[in-house]
Each structure stands twice: as C-alpha cells, then as structure tokens.
Amino acid sequence: MSYIIADNLAKTYGNGHAAVKAVAGISFNINEGEFVGIMGESGAGKSTLLGMMGAMNAPTSGRLIVDEIDVYSLNQEKRADFRREFLGFIFQSFHLVPYLTVIENVMLPLAVVRAGKKKKWAMAEEALDQVGLLDKARRLPNQISGGEKERVAVARSIVNEPPVLLADEPTGNLDTKTTGEIMKLLRRLNDEGMTIIMVTHSSDCAGYAQRLLKVSDGKLVGDN
Amino acid sequence: MNLKVITFRNLMRRKGKAAFVLAGLVIGVSTVVGIISFVEAMTNDINHKLEKYGANILIVPKTESLTLTYGGLSLGGVSFEMDEIREAELARVSSIKNARNIAALGPLVLGVVTFDTRKVLMAGVDFEASEILKPWWNIRGSLPDQNGVILGAEAARVLNLDYGGRVRIKDNDFIVSGVLQPTGSQDDQLVFARLGTVQSILDKSGRVSMAEVAALCKDCPIDEMVRQISEAIPGAKVMAIQQVVKGRMETLEQFKKFSYGISGVILLIGSLVVLVTMMGSVRERTDEIGIFRAIGFRKKHIMKIVFMEAAIVSGLAGIIGYFLGLGASTIAIKFFSENHSGYIPMTPELAFGALIIALTLGLASSAYPAFMASRLDPTEALRAL
Image (cartoon, rainbow over all chains, first blue to last red; front, side, top):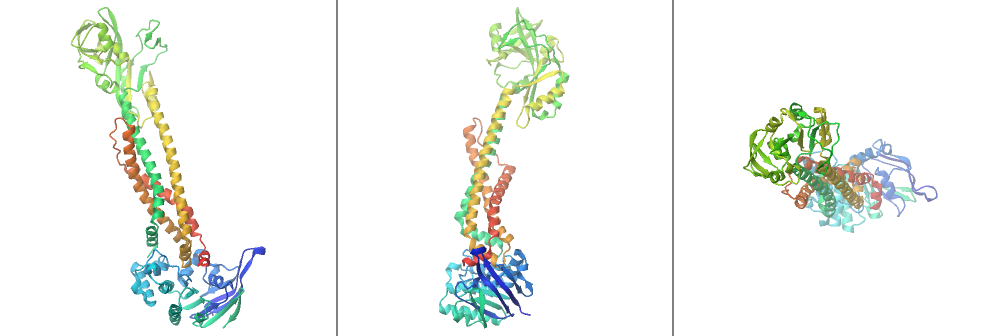
C-alpha cells in the first residue's frame, strides 16, 4: 500500500457564481522515500494542493491518507499534532522568526514537544550540522544571507525528523549557485529516506525529483 | 526552546508595544491603588478628627414629657426632676457586641444646688472619661479631688470666683481647683465635681442623669451601636449625635463611590488600551502565528503565548502600579489632610490586590486577541507567503 494516497482531492473557494475551483479532483499515490515534484503555471492549483497535502487546507471533497491515517477525518488540533509529527515545511520566503536566533528558529517545531532542553539543543545542532550552518547557530536571521536563511528553513523542517517534507518553491528567492546547494541538500535528505513533495516552477529544480506531477487548471495533467 | 522563550523574545523585540500595554495597565492599577490608599488614609484621618469631637452617642432616661427649652432659653419652669439611669445598668454598655469601638463612657449626674442665694446647675462627671469626651476643655488650674470643684467660665464670672477660691454647698466646703476656659457650650454655666461627690451632695448614689459615649466609628455602624446600647439598657433613650458622625461618614462614602467610579472608568480605558494593543500585535504577527500553526502548534499553544505575554506585562504593571499609586497617594494626602504625616503604610492585601487587578485586567483584555490568534488559519498564512 502506498504511503500517501490523494483520493480525488478537490477544493473550491467561494459559493455559487463566485465559486472558484482551485483543485478539481486530483488523485495520486506516493510511496515512502519518493521525491515528487509538482509543476504547473501560476494559478494552476499547486499551492492549494500542497496546502491540502500539508493537512492545513481541508478539501471540499476527497480524502488524503498518510501512513494509513485519514488526515481530514481528524479534528483541527489532531491535525496540528499530525503536522508536527509527520510533516516538515519549507516555505518560499523562509519565514524565519526574526527575534529568534538561528538555532532557536530550528528548534521551533520542538517548542511544544515534551523533551529536555539538552535533547532539543542536540537535535537542533544536528539539523544545523546537516545544512552546514552550525557555526552560525547564535546569529539572528537578519545576520545571515538568503541562501543561509533557506538552509535554516530546511534545518527547521527536518529537526523533528518527519517522514515527509513539503517544500513550496524552496529556491524561488535564491541565485543559481545557492539553488543548486539547496537542491543537493534536499536530494541528500531524500537519499536518507525522507519523502519529499516539492512545488516548483523551475525545470532545473524539478530535475532533482524522481517523479513529476504536472497540474493545470486544478487538474493533474501529467505524472512522469 | 519552549513557549516561554518565544514569549520572552517577542516581548524583548516589541519593547514599544509592551511598554504601551504596561503604561495602560500601570495607569489603571496605580489609580485604583492611589484612590484606595488615599480613601483609607482619609478615613483614618477623619476618624482621628472625629475622636476630637468627643461624645457621639448620648444615653438619657426615657421620659414622656416634652422639652421646654429652645436655644438655651428655658420656658415653662422646667425643673431637673427627671428619671435617672442606674449605674449598674450603665455598666452593661461595656458588654455590647461593638464594645471594642467604645473609646470612653462618661456618666453624668446633674442637679441644682444653691451658692449663697444663687441656684446653679452642678454636674458630677468622670474626669478621666472627660479627657476623651470633652477634648476641647481647657482648664485653668487643675482637676478637682473629692473636695474640689471646677467652674465653667460663665459660672465663675457670675459667682465671682476664681481657682483657689472656696465655696460652700449643702454644708460642705469645696476648693475651686480650676476654671474652664470659655467653650461656647452649656458647660460654661455649670459647676463640675467628681461623680461620687455630686451623687452624695444630690443624694443620688448609684444613679446618673445621663451618659455620653465616644464611639470610634471607623469600622462600626453608629446606628447599630445605638441599637445595641438600647437593648442593653431598656429604660434609657439612646441617641446618636448623627449630624457629626453621619455627615462625615456620608461625605466619605460619597467620595469613595465617586473615586471608585473614576477608578472603574480608568481601568476600563486601561483594558481597552491593552485590548487594542494586543489586537494590533496579533495582526502584526499573522504570518508568524500562521507558521507556528503550520509546524504543529495547537490553538492552546498560541493562546498560551499571548496569555503569557499579557501575564508578564500585567504582573510588572501590578508591581509598578502599586508603588506608583502608593507614592501618589502619599503626596496627595499631604495636601488634603491637615494633620496627617503623609505616610501611607504598605499593606500586603493592597499589594496582592493590585497584582490581581493587573493580572485580571491584562488577561481578560487579552482573551479576545488570544482567541483570534488561535483561530488564525495556517492556510491563510501559507497563502500569504
């Protein structure tokens, strides 16, 4: 059985004549350890689909099954727990918390986890070490470069060792060299067994994925 | 890393906003503390002054006849033949429920005696109690012993006597040990001697004409004390000198109500400041809260962050507000109280109360912003990215 099952996921915003169908019944399966890219033009429904995959945006119809859990049958608080335990997020604009240091940003998902201070620090240091930023642990986000911020975002998304990583245009704001570094990093995480689902515009980035889902007008138009 | 770190770091980053919330709460709390301690100090001050007014309850025998005197004029040949109260009955006053509020009980026996050819009113009093009951008395000379009298200023003038002089009353010789300075009251017309002495002269042993009570009324309802004394001495008529006590207490009560009203309004404004500032803070942090929710913070975690921020600022406001209010009332009392030293003691109850008010206000005003923050949809934040 597949690890992630998207079963006829659909999302409509608004009602009546003003209704906009962002995602119109998409189905696909993803196996554990896959690196899947989602491509499509602007407004195709990629981000809505990623939101639904991320247990944040309840579909109008359809089901999302992850590790045999029917995600949207859970209440909001249980879904928050699900996100914390199963998912790591990398956002397009890094979205680091400006008043927390690099290591504190990385530790953020652990803030509501029952664990000792030392253990949390060790986990954060390990995540920072993986992205090569251990030496900048005490800096604030405004004291590091854009590429480094993205790497901090990656470290934050993997600190609690989630089985699935969701990335929304992770290199959208980065130069080519830094983009390459981030993509290699994601590839390495995938090689270590992490399932990655990445929304991207870039065919270069999409080249790092093992499988590519193409979305257009809210529909799945390709699965290579 | 835990929620406390996030809370503390955010407070440190948004010092201006935290200071604004702090100021709103400090103003509210310090106003309440200031007013409460000021009213308390004024109450003590008024009570202190009330004690100087002397007796505020009169105990007189019950009588069916109406008084025929008005404004010092006696009409219709009023005599001093009246009912009396037994001293043994009067002793029951010390056992009433509010006995601790009695500062002094002064029995008084009255009777008419003849000086040469003149009739004068003689009063037997307890001079120890009189020090509290008649603090305005200023005696030229000294208090009398068993064989002495003091004269009211007018009595001394009419009888042409001064201290050191001698008088003969009912075959007994008495030394005039002192003369009262003019008081402007009926005391100026009287001749005073010790209670036992006058009772013996008037043949009224164990009986008194009336009694005066000085009640300390900070914590006692004067009407309640009157009722208690009436029950203790059924044969007596007990009257409060209402205009003195009630008037001042009512003024103080009105001042209290007005002050508490003002405090309420200021607290309301303070809580609105907190509410508006916290709402603004939540709006500013929409993305941040969205990220928190996206990475798995529950609603209660978001609420906890907002409430912890409010609690830290409110607690600080409670402490600062208490000392500021105390300082303000200490300064104010110097202007409003003639004899007060200006010192207002620190009371743990008020300090605790200030902290509770600040925390209640801060947390209550933050409840809606916290609720709104916790309801933020992570999708909205994600869409904004």
